[in-house]
Image 1 (cartoon, rainbow, N blue to C red):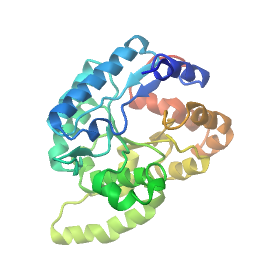
Image 2 (image 1 turned 45 degrees about the horizontal axis):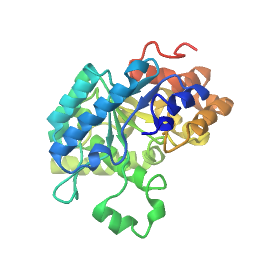
Image 3 (image 1 turned 45 degrees about the vertical axis):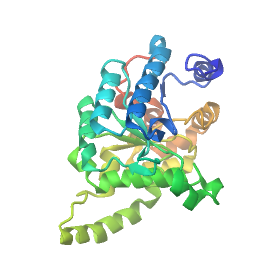
Image 4 (image 1 turned 30 degrees about the vertical axis):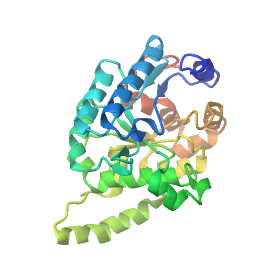
Amino acid sequence: MSEIKSPTGGRLALSNENGIGYTIYSHTVPGVQGIIGRVEAEKYATEVNNWIYNKIKDHRDRQGAFAALSMHDPKQAGEELERCVKKLGFHGALLNNWQHAGKDGETYLLYDHPSYDVFWQKCVELDVPVYLHPAAPYGKIHDTFFKDRRYLIGPPISFAQDVALHTMGLITNCVFDRNPKLKLIVGHLGERMPQDFWRTDHWLEDVERPLADSRGDTMSRKPILHYFKNNIYITTSGHFSTETVKFVCDYVGADRILFSVDSPYEKIEVGAGWYDKDEARLTKALGGPQQYFDVSRENAKKLFKLSKYHDSDA
């Protein structure tokens, strides 16, 4: 890893240059979710977590981390999360959407199945959030939908499509109902779910729930906005649009929004520059100076239980 990309090299300098007091690092795509073998995935997750801990341990007033986890075995995932939170001081976990499994990686493990409740219960017990991060399409999904549509892979559509499906599965399959204190983070100003709040809620409440009740099926019991206002946080990562911030804030409130850049996929100076330079319009969009300040850092301080860090009182 080159020094310019090192957590204690160029990235720390970039934070200083752009007024970022604290950074939470994570291991993203394909990450551990791309490893189809359970033993290999679990071993690699532990190695990744130990590596980043050793890189940032002397700079904990500036840097933290999310745990990387193998999701082949929900119980083991919870145990590794507990080690990372209690022994390494991590702030939660980041999962790169579903876990690839099976002989060819074409089995997709999604975490809305009741077998994952042991993991979600551990998250609640530890009182830490899980960041559900996108991953690129793979195998048959890639070949069927994106082989001839390569420019739609990633931020143009595939990322939002996959995370939205997974998140809505967590809602409708009652993960939050069974774990009402669970905290989930999604990026990119909500992976386009807020834009469909009205239509999604209309169909779930007026069509799907009556059907589920008539069949004796189990389905989420509260309107979709309940989960976004009580369980789900939304970051600005990679979506530096003041107009979209206003739209999302009008639905969920400023207390559910976190400033984030999405580095290295987006440039720190672009994300931080947008938030600083568009302060007047963002302040209006978010409801006032306090809300602008809260989104910039106070919401994250509460969620991640941060106390004193570099420029924490600036």
